[in-house]
Structures are given as structure tokens and as C-alpha cells.
Length: 241
Image 1 (spheres, rainbow, N blue to C red):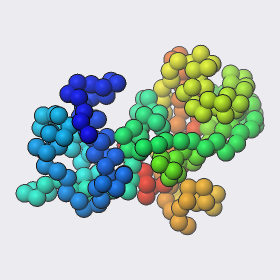
Image 2 (cartoon, one colour):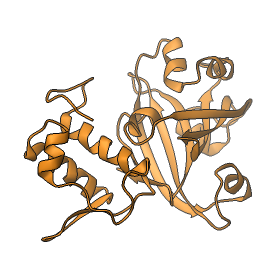
Image 3 (cartoon, rainbow, N blue to C red):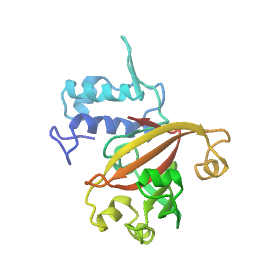
Image 4 (cartoon, rainbow, N blue to C red):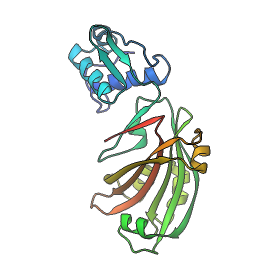
């Protein structure tokens, strides 16, 4: 695989190299404990200088994917977990770019309900106001990576449920309402054991630990447009803040 020396699609070269190495690990070309090629070999593979390769390896080391051993080289630390960055602009497909060959979402259903206190507070509406509730599971290469429940204000998005089935993407549906872009207002992360439904849908062992993300997204004016509760298997995912 050869990557040009400039930026492709706005993605810096060091990031492309890091993503390519992750894909080697996720795809089974490199396993836990394997030694990576030397910096010189990686520089040749990606048509890059060693400084750029070194930066990519440093990022992977910070994420716990690889680790350097003095006099021995750089080794794969974890071949199992994917790295999902949490920031101001968090998107499932962009966050896992380069770490999986296919990214898909299964929509499990939707309904209109009255907002409880927690949902109302997150969306800036009154308790009891109607909200659209969307249920889904996201997968990478067919492996379930998150179980998500999302609430949206019904007054602004009355037919969101129908549009998500057609467009298969929250970003695309928001765009259909005239919201060209949106950002993350807040994220709270905790951990707990998976319940029975989550264990089944995510294909986990009983007692598996979940990383739980409570996130609020807002439009360009700072108005909340969604509140999402996402559950990630800790054995498969790490959340990078």
C-alpha cells in the first residue's frame, strides 16, 4: 500500500499511516505481540519520511495499540480493540475510518414517547414533551460495536424515524432538515455490566463490561438536536477523549 506525501481528502499523512497500521491489525495481518516493520521499512511502504512514520507510531502508542521496547522494536499491544475518538465532531464512520473495511448500522425500531426528566434536560425541553426514540446497533466488519438509543425533539423532527430508514445515516437525515453540520456539546462516560438484551445484541459473554457514553449534539446555533445513550463492549472498543 502506497500513500501520497500530501494530504488526501483532508487527512494528514501521519493519520493515514496510523489508520493503515490499525487496519493491518484488525484485519489479522498483525497479531498481539507481533513486531512491526522498522521505521525505514514503513517509510518506504508509505512513501514518507521517518519523522512522519514516527508520529503515526507515537499516536498508536498513546492509544495503547502498539508499544516500543528498547533495542527490540515496536510491537502490537492490542489486536482486539478499536479506537473511537470522542471530540467536538464525533461521527461513527469517521471515528473508525481505517480500522474496519465495512461500517454498517442496523436500525432496530423507533417510537414517539414522552420525555422523562433526564431526556428533557439533555434536549432543553419540558418533561413530558414528545420525543422521537431511535434504537440501533452499529457494526464494523459485521462485529457489533455499539448499541445506541437516541432521542430527538418531536416538534423539530416529527418524521425522523421514517427518514432514517431511507437514508441510513443521522448526518444525512439532519442534512435533509437543513442542518448542514452539528457538533458534540457534551459527553459523559461511565462503565457497567451489560444487561441481558445488550449481551445478546452485542454477542457478548455474560458479565461483559460496557463503556457507556451519554452524548448531546447541537446545531450551529447551539440548540440541542439529539441525546444519545451508546453502549460499547470494553473488550472491543476504547474511547479516546
